[in-house]
Image (cartoon, rainbow, N blue to C red):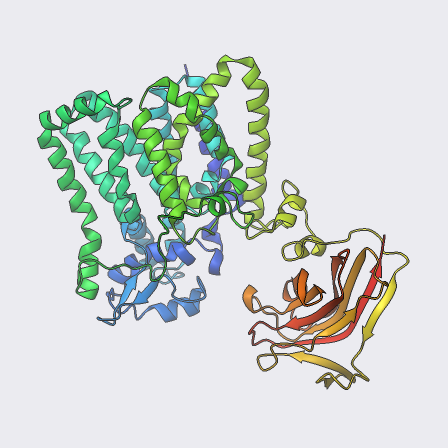
Length: 590
């Protein structure tokens, strides 16, 4: 007879398979949306460099691949080593090692195809790597069920599996972004915990070997995962008194611990050997200026920022924090789970590049599953908890589904949000241009404008103070690489302002600018004397396409006290051309 958790696992596999093959099959995409693009291409690049191009040092093949497949804007996943002049891969080689058998399948496929080139990035490679690492993710869920059943009821385990597969951002990295490192590390940690359990039950040599290989692999995928060695060392400990017993165990089975260390080194040393071969040095820091702020971790920004906060976009993972105290009271594996939970969270938030979507905690979800399951099991036993927890989990799961959907093609922007935009669109399925303005400007008036007063109008036809250029019979301001700033247009406050102000202009876009930081900014600044008291801004290019002429406006709530408002345009270093005409300012109440 099937247990509930077994049925739950099957449902997880079905939902994950649907997402991977029907909702968003990355291997069917091209350019920056393909399986092997951006960071994923950086993890993978070792394989074509070694087995196809035989060029691990110079990576002379990179430019032709970038031009052909457009999987990134530049070869940002490597840098030139100053002393040797050779390219050094930014990311460690562990994920490439895991991907090797899937790469072999793709290469065999492409090599025997008359359609696809055997160049490392054609469709056979995209599919083989994506599908192979998807299978690795399924293996992680299989082992998560095994380890949780050792400590929790079958019903509890069933809930956790479903929640992970639907209600957390794990599903995104397991079924969509498979070629990133996170779901593979999730699987590594799940298997590592399982073999740690089996080792202390049997002290079998095979489990010691597996533990060493897994810790080595985790470290080879991401060097900070060296801390994974703490899990097998501390597993089973729940009090200070357990430390002496563990030391005795290490002495009694020293040969097995030594063997685990040898296996760890056999895998982890692959990276120093690569560095030595490419640069002549055994240790190379490949992340450039990126580093850690150990004394000032970015806890709030990483966790709660509207730009990319982990718990802002994966709010279900608040619950493991809630369950920590309940888990602690169980007095089972409290030391390894709680210590590793807090340590991993600290390491992740200390990394200075915190604004990448909160994904770096995904690999630790097998550990977070323990306090999460403790909370669920407590709720299963107390109806009052059920009335609060389970409806709350449904809401949080809904937000996760909303986020995953819009992260891959929905109307609502999924990352790099503002506070105003997040609260206007969270959980909603459509968005328009006014919503998009909230990304930069917190003021948007959505009602019908009535009884408005025109405060300013300038078509530049008679304005001798503006350096205009005639285009299509009109005098217009031209913004390009040589004209970074427009003139500043000032309106003095003389009691004529109402509650709202709307600034509008006609724009003609010669060529759309896609890089955000280069896009022309439409700026409005309120001053009280010489002190700026309010700023409003939107970028123009998200609202206009190449060759299009369009009226675009920006709203601002009028401050209670100010002496003047300045309006200007900043081209922000962009080299695309934008024309501006018919600048108008109106004010209105409602």
